[in-house]
Image (cartoon, rainbow, N blue to C red; front, side, top):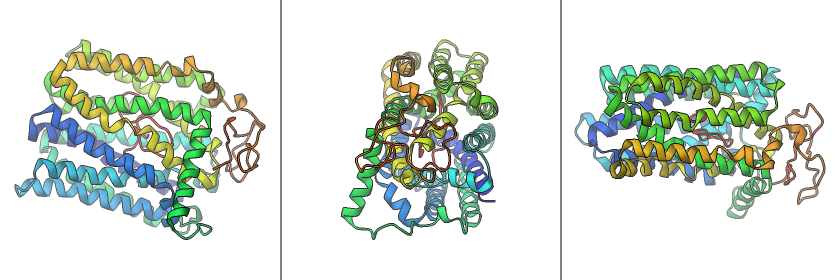
Amino acid sequence: MPLAAVLSANAISISGNSLTLIGVPWFALETTGSPGKAGLVAFCAAFPVLLSALMGGPVIDRIGRRRVSVLSDLICGLALLAIPLLNETGLLRFWMLCALMGVTGLFHAPGETARHVLVPDLAERAGTPLSRAASLYDAVSRGARMTGAAVGGILVALIGADTVLYVDAATFAVSSLLVLVGLRGVRAAEPRRDAKPLSLPAYRAELREGYSFLLRTRLLLAVSLMVMLTNGLAQSWSSVLLPVHAREQLGGPAALGLLVAVFGGSALTGALLYGAVGHRFPRRPVFTVGFLLAGSPVFVTAALTDTTAPLLVAMVFGGLGAGVLNPILTTTFYEVVPERLRSRVGSASTASVLLTTPLGGLAAGLLIERAGLTASLLTVGVFYFLVTLSPVLFPVWRQLDPSARPTTGKDEEGTDEEGTDEDRGGEEEDGSGDGTGAGAGAGAVSSSGPSTPRPAPGPGATTPRR
């Protein structure tokens, strides 16, 4: 069925994604020997993601979510395939590596957005509650990341980082085939029939509608600002800090793969637990505790130890905390954003949470070369802790729970903020409405990347990069 096809495609895609997460930083460190250059490669991969997310929402609706997903995977796979091919022939230059990673960054965000915004429609088609489908989507992603990371660390150690990139390219091809076949005939995956002919004024209007909705909806804005900051800090961890720590103090890529796999496995457990019993608990305290566990303790532990065991313990607890984050944010996004706006608001939220991501790896590489690894880990860990206090300090976060959201008010077009059952995908179960007091019903990781404001890979929630 279509939901199973999307889940399978994501599992395969993210397994390969984990190979990239390990293989590309290690490849950059091996070929350049410089943390600063490894950080520059991470910047080149992340900055185009921001550009495509800023502009992609209306295009996804017109081309169709299935087509966008397939094209995205194929282009990213070809770009990754070119890296080891050029390296084997002796033609690969550092600027080429940066450019090819830029291509993968430019195209993976629209593909991920296209798949992710289909979940409510596919869940309804399969007769699955939305909160359960969101948790399942995240759990499958985390399980794939865990497996991919474990295999990636071993493969890098045995056959080299360049060979691992061949495997990663193959995962893109399989993912694109699953979506191409599995979503055939699904109306929500095809181009919008009511979309106006593409013109610059129409494009601007639709783009503006997505960003206006995000800026007026206080809860989504608060989530986007927080995750924007944590994504930059998490990117510094996954792309530079952890690979350098593994190379210098933990014994190499096998330890790197083990740590990422343990984090992913624990996050999978957390997501499954939340999917099973999470609906019984208020979202805000669960989200707050989860983020506090998933962030700064990992950085501080890495700074204070040069062995693997203590960091493994921190990754276990961090992963459990991270596992609850994406299901909460994803369910909230689907409740708040009307179906007709999900691609546009999804792209807007993706762009917002990725604003700092390009700088994360670049800043970490430069910081290590100037201040050393330990000082860099502690600095980032302190900043992470301060940011994750946001849900404790600001009342708007109470609206993570539907019962705390306003149920009256009008948007700019005179539409009730509660919207319609069709707009909400039938998700209003408690009668509280989906408005947030900021214009729901009108006009964002996903580490991170996402179509919803989701945290990026590393400390915090893990989210597919493509």
